[in-house]
Amino acid sequence: MTTDQHIYNIYHDPELQAIVMEWNGYATSAQFREGTETMLKFLVRHRVSKVLGDVHNMVLIGMEDQKWLETDFLPRAIAQGFQAIAMIRPRHYFNKVAVESVSYKIDSDKLRIQFFDDREKASQWLRELV
Image 1 (cartoon, rainbow, N blue to C red):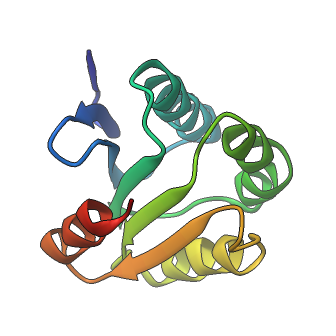
Image 2: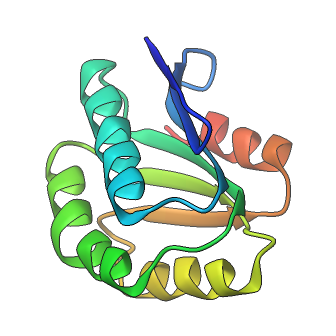
C-alpha cells in the first residue's frame, strides 16, 4: 500500500526494510499530522523499525507541530517500535532549524537520528543498521 498526495508520499521499501516518507512543499498542520500518523501505521503494519525521511523539499514544520512531535507523536511511535530515522537535510533554512530543534530533544538511546545530504548515503546507513 502506498499513499500518494501532492504534499507527501509514504510507502514501504522492502529492500531497505523501512518506511519512506517524502515531503514536498508546505504542509498544513492537518496534512503534516495525517502524513506522520500514516508513516506510523505503515511502520506497524510492515513490522519495521526504520524510516527514511526525505524532507529536503519540505518548507516548514510549524511550532505547534514540532511540540506535537516531541511530546505526543514520538513517544507513541517509539513505544510501537520506531527505532531509527535517516533524514535528508531540508534545503529550506527554517525547516532545517525546525527539524534539528526537534532532533536535539530526542533521547538518542530510544531513537537514532542521522542527517544526510543525499538519499543514497541515508539508504546505506539504514541498510547497515541491525
